Length: 465
Image (cartoon, rainbow, N blue to C red; front, side, top):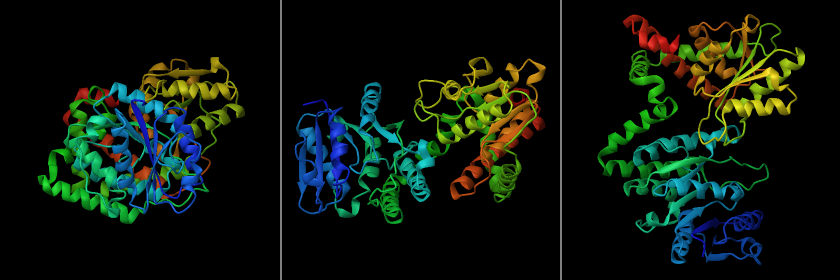
């Protein structure tokens, strides 16, 4: 059989299972479907397909179905097992990406992370996943981007090391527990981006956010208590996300020291300092216009891509630049942003390609593909602007991102006019949460700025001016 086997748990998936399995077979000839006590036509939908079907007479839960399929695949000689859901939320066409990642990282679990596509994520599910991510990451001892994604690749040598006691109550606990046990065996996970697919006519999810997250949290709590709370894991979870986003060669040790100082100030003020900046972010987001007729070069900061594709918020920035160009042709558009995440092209290049498809002449687009964050975006823009007519730049970004961009541009001495990507501010729980994140980053920036001035730390000042 193929070295890689695909396992698909299925419970009442008659509408989608045939399409999912047929597409999986197109990229991997060894597919195991576990019909977990379905009462509809799931089994009949698989007739005629070259697939191994394992049948449970009664529903035993997703965890038991996955473990049954994994053991069958191992018995058939699989060297790795890919799991994906049967409801159409996962694209079997993404399987080669998991195989390629496994070749590069053979001692890792490969997890398809959906949170890069959080605009398509139902907010309650997104929030529940974020809560679960924190607890599971703590117990596993390292940050996990999407602990609840069922699209994964497991090395066979890991699965042979593990044992589980499974029952119906552990239906959605199993995959979380597996990541924790894998870490204890020396197998961490890495993430690759996948789309978050939620079709409007999809069947209701079997995952119940409140109940299942509570069960997951109980399992994690027991795991932590049995290991003395694993404080080293908590430290890595709290510090490593920032380390990944702002690499040490970018912000240095001073930057992380200021991050701790910023958090201390938030604690000492009872969160008031953060709330004040949050209100400032909200005010700027509300009052900034989306039509600007003055200024010179139109500046579009890049944004992390979904693979090599432009995400929704970045698309809004680029679309606004196109609208401004149509109103006033001839104004140069500058797109800045380097290669981030798992992308093969830079954010700037992806933005350039989009603008060209919209008819913007190539000689009126400038790209800078080295920046890795907003501060570098703006610094490189300042350094690239030599012609007087390019100033002030029209800084186009999303409403929740305007306040931080304005503060950084002012610090760098970049003359600018703000322009909102969205027509109006549309408040939602997710937007408010993003604004809180922006306020947190702004708090970090101001803490560093005033601390550097107070201590006359010229090295820090050079990074933010």
